Image 1 (cartoon, rainbow, N blue to C red):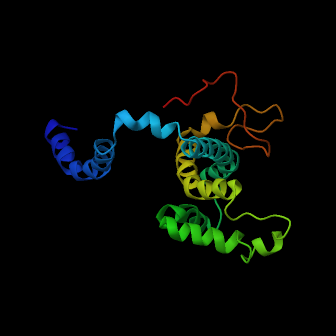
Image 2 (image 1 turned 30 degrees about the horizontal axis):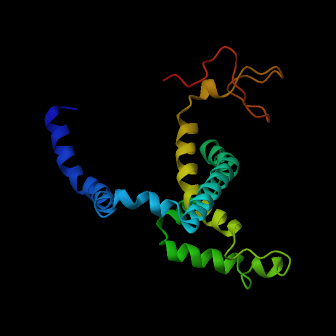
Amino acid sequence: MSARHGSLLLLLSVPALALIVLPLVGLFLNTEIARFGSYVCCPQVAEALRLTLVTSLISAVLILLIGTPLAYWLAYSEFGGKQVIDTLVDLPLVLPPAVAGVALLMTFGRVGFIGIHLAPKITLPFTTAAVVMAQTFVAGPFYVRQARVGFESVRDSSRWPRSPWGHPRSEPSSRLPFPSPHMPFWPVS
């Protein structure tokens, strides 16, 4: 890319950068750093921070566990309706947060179509589990998208190792692929 094109792209990127950076600057400009310690020491704030850290960690692990197989399946499988599944995976990204919350409540709430079968033994609304579900619902598609791109970037020849069961490298077996001792740990372009 030439310097002229780079400068033009930078100029065109300034509005997007401003939209991302200026609210963060405004947040820091209106925060009294000297009083920050007194806010963090409050029991309510400490509990909110603890809850946020715990639910975020649980959500991240859950997204990793359930999102990786989905991303792998979308990256390497060809089937009818793949675009529909891909669109459904992306849908939480474009839903307003209030709509996402209402959708989860209508599904898992006490009178939701799944929640009604869980009650009275399991109540999800307004619990830590509900927070984890909401975080997973909203953040999961980001991981699935990026993991899918990562899986698709691995060359086909390095994806399937030499098989001791006699399958050629171009014809994958029904077993999960494992790295070959002859290939590098990361894909080489």
